[in-house]
Length: 295
Image (cartoon, rainbow, N blue to C red; front, top):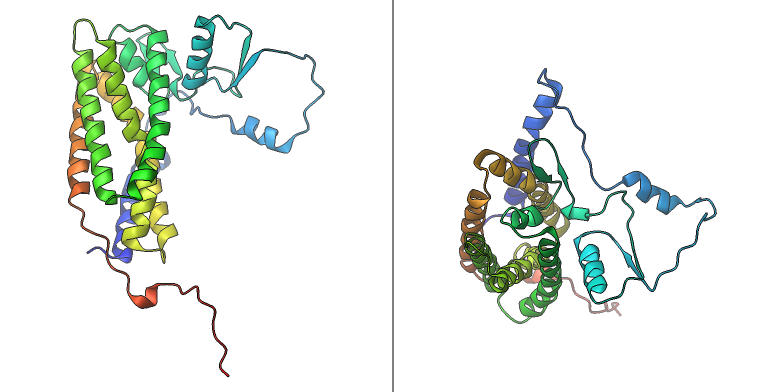
């Protein structure tokens, strides 16, 4: 069984190896790549926190106000518009809409700034509006996945629950790839694939925190969870870059989808093989009983 010290040491070594390459290149004489890092505007966020805004120059009124111009907000606005409700206003802190699904275009092709799920669908012939609807459906499935995970791990062996969601993600991506390979994609099957993958995506962090506490205890919980969360965020950050590189080289998402299918399935098998959590010794438990004073 791996100890806390071994886990933390191994995690630190893995993070260090990931960081050495960029640091070495930054300090060397490597070529300068034109461009800039973009993302959420921290300056605007800090301004909202600090206050000190001038008096409003204009007052707007609308029957419905949607806060956030990400894929969910834009999808909600589109659905309301289709139902005849046109007196609506979509607000966002950023200058451009899209959120995590924002994209751009250069002389070579269109490209995503973050998530690939919208261009993944539009590259197969679906319109941007239909792709946005499926992205919104995945967002709803992620919310359901978060709630359902908490309910299930309170009642069943947590690794089995995690394995089920991993396998569900693998099947969802497999079905997605199958649908996108069709001459005319079946939208019903596509919705099933998106829901399956969305449910699994919503279950990720809840399982990490719960399983960490059960298998490693609470003594070093903060450190262990922090290492896992950093690794998770590195994967979130580098994932779109890797998928984008695969698409640039192969001109297709097929290889990336095949890697996801294999990774999710392997993760499910590994999770299913995790045994029961170790029994804690009596001295590791914290007593909540009042201390009796000696007479």
